[in-house]
Image 1 (cartoon, rainbow, N blue to C red):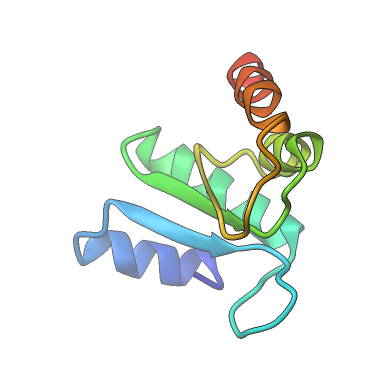
Image 2: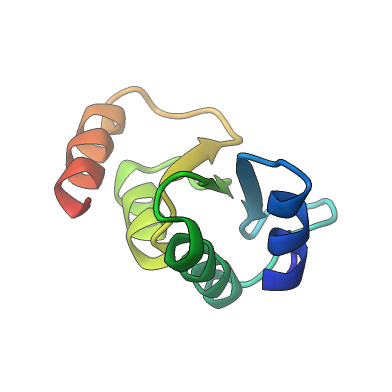
Amino acid sequence: MQSTNEADAAIAAGALAVGLVGAMPNGPGPISDHAIKDIAAHVHRLHSNKIWTVLLTSHTDGDAIADHVEYTQVNTVQIVDALCPAPIKFCAVRIRACA
């Protein structure tokens, strides 16, 4: 999704999730974290948590992932790169604490 209008159109067509692509090392589709936050807030305002707002993040560090989720206020995260195993538990605990 690139805008609230695209999110609205997808949801009206039956989508149960909207993908919001954060900064990536390459490839098409990323939008700014500010735009992700705005779109997620718009979707949550209209649909509560019935629609998944999915942040696609290339961060691999637990703190960075948690910071990204916390700032954008999405309710789902997809990590698109390999993680170091150690920060996963910390990231999960910290994200639950932010909810």
